[in-house]
Image 1 (cartoon, helix red, strand yellow):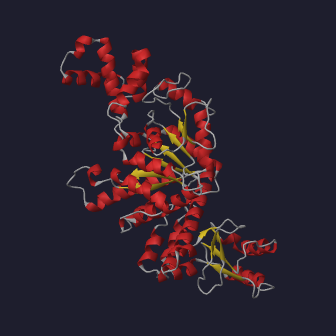
Image 2 (tube, helix red, strand yellow):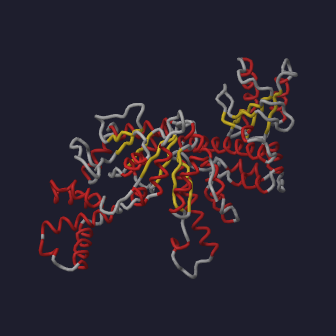
Image 3 (cartoon, one colour):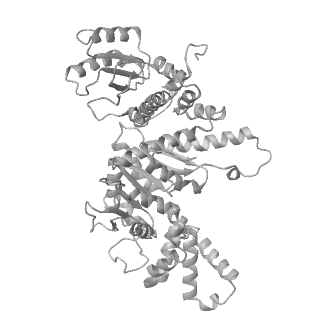
Length: 516
């Protein structure tokens, strides 16, 4: 419904997608905001049309799909609003109306160059309502010769609002998925009742990732959370047990003490290293010397089992290609273990582990890039690899932008759709690589997806004086700030509430929908 100023909810949302002219942003930041807004608008139009077709109980094959023909963004074989099919859609997002007149002319010029889409109707969809002058120009260029063969129409927000209204509550929900660029406005929207938008978004993301998977475009980036799910100790636990091994070697008398006393000694050593994981790891590597890799192997596999990890099994199944397809394009893992390889072997999936720049997989094998190094459960260790476990390995890997691991990650981030599982997304070097990849694709919106857990009530503490409204505000600020931050790096967030949901999400990527 229009407000007192004549604007509908959709028009206000579209206006808020971009920062205001008063915001002090660098040119690159404003350009990225424009690209992100354009991407959101195109996804909104696509989902709106899909919902509209589904509401008519049409077969699934009539849904709007991403077009691979010419310069059109979407195409459908089903009539919408009495337009004769096939209908091709060209979606354009503009900061202001200054280019609308020129755009109307360019659309016709593109058509004169040759239309290979076999479309009978072409719909130009814009985030701005065409002015009277722009509409006049458009009316002039669509009349001569186009007549009966081709219908050329222009949809603005009012036309989209008509489709939204026909969908009822589902239409309102999809309008709410348009995240505004201004964080303050987004938080106000969340607090006033849009708190479950992430659920609608994740169903859309799963559907899009399914399409990427079918197109052989999906790459998985795996972090510690995936291995922890299989019984591998956390980084903190790994360091503690390695310190225990160091103490046993350096001071047998100390190890004759109670387990409580040994634990206190380990905690003291960690504290003396200022609780720096990298510094602690460097100390351990120096202290254990030739026993270091074997000690790490003993600790990480002590309780590990692929049988206990639904996450690994779900990822492995996504690596299993449909008939005649590739499946997952590649896997990048920051973990030392080879548990995914063990899982793939059980499913008879061909793979090749890559842990240095001197080896590579062939086209018939799934490459698994161990960019921090590989410590297999059995067999010899590769002496040529750089194990990114401690400071020296970390510095070697990331100070040189042309190391094999950096080059591989950048190529995959720029050329494919990446899914981040078991990663907190806080590592500065991962974020640096994402920013480089995002800058290389400045005209595209975020396409990668990170699976992250949402804040729970317990994460906010048990302050009885905190009102539910304040808690909602804090939660909204945290989640939306994270969405903006990662969005700038080309990553969307697929939120979940409990880690047990991850296997179901991964299964949804394979099937195309989330089960209840």
